[in-house]
Image 1 (cartoon, helix red, strand yellow):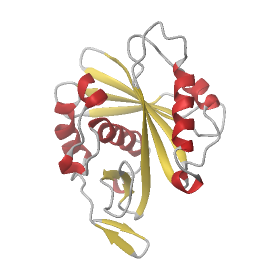
Image 2 (image 1 turned 180 degrees about the vertical axis):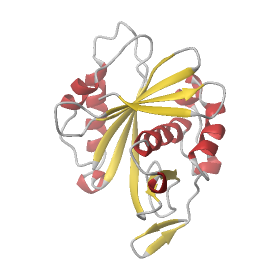
Image 3 (image 1 turned 90 degrees about the horizontal axis):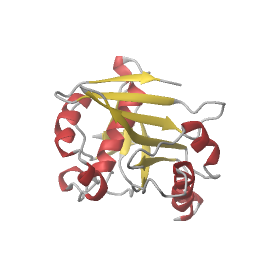
Image 4 (image 1 turned 120 degrees about the vertical axis):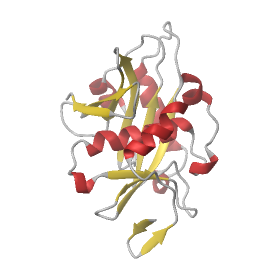
Length: 213
């Protein structure tokens, strides 16, 4: 149950982040993230939307107290969007919108930063101010190959928009026992875009988070 100001809505959510990871992880593959079908039992969110919502919660929870942890839920039936981040203690909810930056050829001349900027601009123009206002935009960056992008450059390049915040998530690489993802706040003011590294154990539902800037 998700509670708002004087209201409550029926939604679906995992009991905790550990259970969420154990259920999501088996479906995380390049094919599923690119073209996976909506997951009916979880509000018809796409696999990459569910995964990105988990990654965002993992990053944010790393700087919150144990009793202030965030969860993610499906949309209430009366709302359109790509899920909700919910603060169970504070009874606050952030509605999410997603946009996908598809894999690009290593020879593609357009930079990843420019592709992120274009994706944010396209999402802003999809509706009108009320469409974006109060929502958090989550950009899933599937750069592909060995192409890299720089959070600070991407943050400076995003166009003016009406979203509450703009975040980006992307696969950063792998080491022997871990998969590594980056989670970056692109809409922050200041020199450095806040960036987290979420490191996920390949063999069991465990993870760690490091803030790298």
